[in-house]
Length: 403
Image (tube, rainbow, N blue to C red):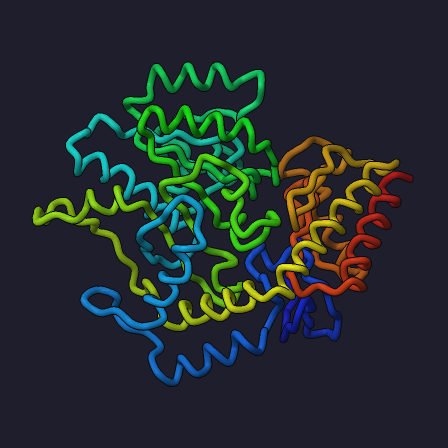
């Protein structure tokens, strides 16, 4: 295993190493960095907030950054969201959603609804609830005996949608919630699926009164070309999970939104119906300020145009990859491009990952494949020259593999 590379600074898309090397961060440092590293606008906002209020318990207190962020997020989110519950990362945002869903039914006296429905190949985080609703894989292998039971289904296709609908008819009254990554499954291999059949599946789920949880931790904030992946769907979620790009990649923050009907199940004089969940750094003022600053940048027309340009560039490059390189299943969804290298077994443990990473870094580009799945998810500030270099490095590596 290669030793970690000490990074001393970063700016825009570039990471600067201790030995003087520079790397284009082509995966946005695990998909979090939207606008580039050390963005001066976000940094300035955090600085001024730190001089005013850096942290306060979010129980019995509130503060302006948290209120303003909720007020700005809610109108942007698909699904007529009504409330925001803050936590501190993507895993906890999904934990909140799962607990909220199960307790919703418990508060209503329908205690038979305890099961969770989820997709195979899914990934929703590394805490125990999030692991439970993630696919049983190398990520969760050591903990399988400790994870709660989940009903796993494949992403919808013309061949399986009928069987899934039948399953819902048989077990729907026992299912509390359905959690899904809309249109793109992240750590499970950047798997992509069609909106039309997902709409049909969500309609069937809603017919069984099952709460729909959209995990937009990775897909949110423009990654799929639209602000949120759920915007491609006509059937909207009841709960949405957010993190990663929420603060522009500056610091950790999680947010879980919900519809009014879910919120109302917890508004009661009965203390036992309280949602007993909290974090020390819930709604941290610095993190909320960073998120507000990131939204400022994201809503600029120049940023929206840059996202569209990355989407077009990826589509063009995908056509190039499909012509004679040792790859399969080249796919694009907005600013996300992915493919499998046709060498060895498919999966996270394919050793081609480290080879691709090392070769790309020698050429000044940082890629981190998921096994033999190579993907791009660049910051929106990437220049034409930088993106062209990333594409060129990928084709050079693939050409070597072809020999």
